[in-house]
Length: 74
Length: 269
Image 1 (cartoon, each protein chain N blue to C red):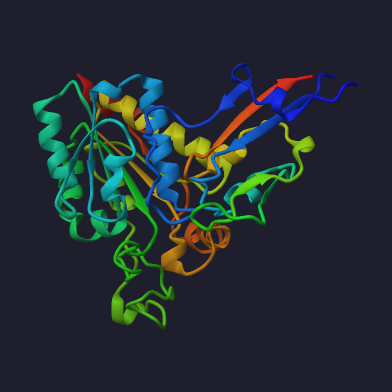
Image 2 (tube, rainbow over the protein chains, first blue to last red; image 1 turned 90 degrees about the vertical axis):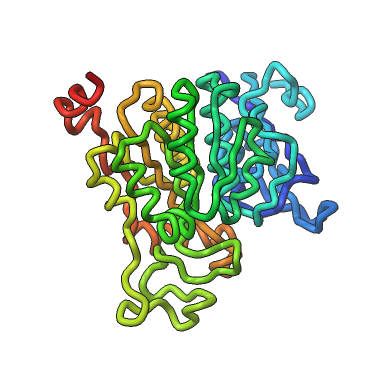
């Protein structure tokens, strides 16, 4: 069976750290970072990148459209 | 099996989903987790999919979304408080080949603008109305709105809304569904990926109905206001599921195309 690997790219400076993507992720890839961005928000990042399947759920619920999703079959 | 690196996945040809070009690069002024952001995105995506960027005119309201014209790259007008449907009526009548929509909150549409929206819908104006209902006046500091739930604490009802003192919450969407002029009335939400997909379908249908000239399309988005409710965005979504959906159940309230085909045909003839 073809395996699907995905990855997300977060625009860190625009992310407001609301955490909605964290609960939307079915494979628990996303966490809020311990570091903060220029505005002082804990931005979203891939804590567990191997598990990402590129489903785009995080980007769909992101209110600020800061997540870009990429997917590849390996 | 050779392990693929993240930089090999993040490439242009593997791109699946991201920000649409109709949204501008401005950072939205909305609070973290605000449903306005998702709703803006859906409107922008629908405009992109239908390829109507040059033909769409939005009417922004008074409220948090007053600055919507900074974020969606189309033509905009800004109406006085609650008067967006009146402005949209004029715009649509003068430019019938354009797509006109209003984007209103509950303080704007259900309170001061109740007369405008009811009469615009009753006349069956060929416009799309996007109604964002968060049961509170978000922009001015979380005061009680007509849509505030019974028992819900707000800045002006700190012990919760009481029916005897403040009256009952207003189901404006149900009122509008009774009017013969409206073609499509639905209530959606944007808190989960599945809900976002459904809401997008509803907004798309609302815009497509304009081309078919069958009457007003009214789309309510039940949404959160984490700043006004004074809880975190994730908790707001949970609170909304538990409390708001009981009083404001999701789903289509009216679809003239399906429910009443005879009337619908008469209307388009």
